[in-house]
Image 1 (cartoon, helix red, strand yellow):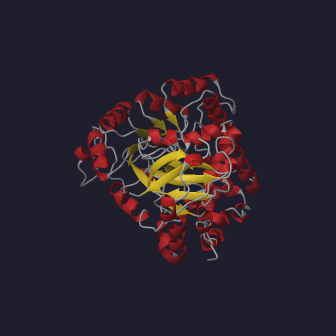
Image 2 (tube, rainbow, N blue to C red):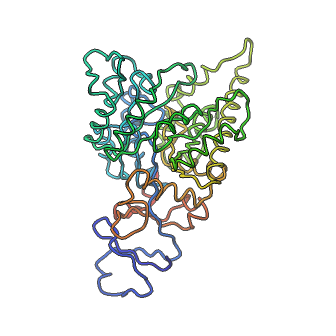
Image 3 (spheres, rainbow, N blue to C red):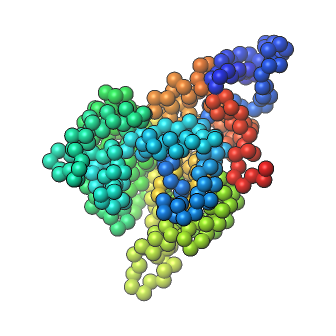
Amino acid sequence: MRDAEVRIHEGRIASISDATRADPAGSRSTVETIDGRDLYLAPGLIDSHVHLGSIPGMTDEQEAAHPDIARAARDQIPRSYLLYGFTTLIDLVSAPEAMKRWKSHAIVPDTFFCGGAALMDGYPMNYLPKPQRYQAAPYMLIESGTPAPAGIDPALHTPDAVVARMKADGAICVKTFYERGFGGVQDLPLPKLDTIRALVRAAHTAGLPVLLHANTSEAQTFGLSAGVDILAHGLWRWDEASSTTAVTPAITKILDNVLSGHVGWQPTIQVLVGLQDLANDSYLADPQLARVLPTGLIEWYRSAEGQWFRNEVLESLPAAKGEDPQAAVARFESTFATLIDRVEHATGYLASHDARLLFGTDTPSAPTYANPPGLNAWFEMQRLVAAGVTPAQIFRAATLSNAQAMKLDRDVGTVQVGKRANLLLLRQDPTQTIQAYAAIAKIILGGRVLNPADLVANRTH
């Protein structure tokens, strides 16, 4: 709609009318007026795959040891998402206490959460030691016939019981997992098909969509058979022995089933890039980081302590006897280049067939500093364009499609009377270029007008 006048009252869109016919006097003197001539008004963006409980690249122990750095980082992270236009976030593995902490900051995007229904001792529970992992996973699944840990009632960890608890806690979705492991771990327990089918039935009865962590051909085939609503990763780990990156007949069959089932698909290409970038010695010199991360945190990342995850990853690389360590790093980068090429080809295939793409970044996908909040989404957009996704498809994936998939479309996803006033004023048309998000003119969060300059990290005022 051209030449529109949009009125906002009490955080919602009150009216949309033809500005050329509006009365220029009278009531306008009592309201804040934003001149949007030559600009584009769009709904705020939605990242439907984030993790907000930790500071990227920092363990809980490190955060406790550096409270000033951590405090500045936690204050900035919500602003960094807003800086790149993300007014709504979905944390895919969280719980009420973590959400309460996240929402305690002065400026925070509208944030919702999924409950993480991990199989007992499976991914991602395996990263925590026993018995701590059982206390940290309130929604874990214990399958029939599996002995429960001491002090835990298995009746509270059936699919029906887990979904009921999530719903009571305020979750809007269910996240579950199919992951054998990676790196040095390849034998994690996997859920049975009947278990996840029961989880899907319980979730749908409760009105909750189900997302499955699945980045392999085996996992996505499993998810399609289980009837999940969203595959929460692109397809980059193929079971074929060859090193091909072009879409094969076997992969095409999976992708065609995604299309025919109208299953939501989050490419999350930056997951791979954020790991590959650990081998990039100049990564932390990127001036874009200073827009979204406090200087103190960037400096800490450069320290020996801050390099812990990078060192852990690179030192774990298998090396042939007598091999130059740099050769192992080169193989590491080459391996990820192959995986990135695969997911880009798979994403391009789906985009060319108008799949139900959903914008999500998995920020941070691991304790890596190379998944910076907000900026990581901008990088993901660039990767999607490289894969063949059009700006219009990205715009829809990050607005209405995400809102519909998460059942939030009554409130967000479009510029429409009655919806929450989460809006962006852009200098370029976002359906034509992703550069529209590179320099946003105004962000409006629930009717509150935010200037991008006030959201940048390391502000001088």
